Image (tube, rainbow, N blue to C red; front, top):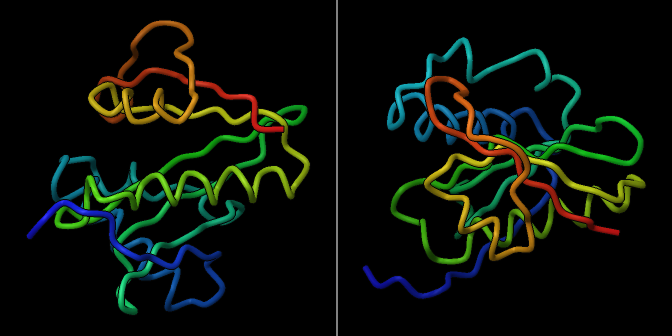
Length: 149
């Protein structure tokens, strides 16, 4: 399979089935692939987060979520794309959609905890590293921020 961009529809999660599909992507990527304990992957913040999905030919292949933090700052997280669809523009489209949604909710800055091995992806989208590398679910992460207003 080539690594060209693929057409995806990115949208807000609006139904229980879409939420289940989003969580299934996270379970495949974080729990099955990266050995994050399921009880750490699914947290209380899922209930209050804004969730988005990426679909290709009706199949949910990616997800991410948005949490409102202090004064105009949101946290983007749980970005996950199923393995066969990586490096084909899906993550970038999810990120742009999450930023647009954050702006529509009045946010001016986005913050995220990037897994260290994908920090270049976020840097390419304008995110700047803040602070030192830390462990989250046993995986090295770095905080990154971007002005989105």
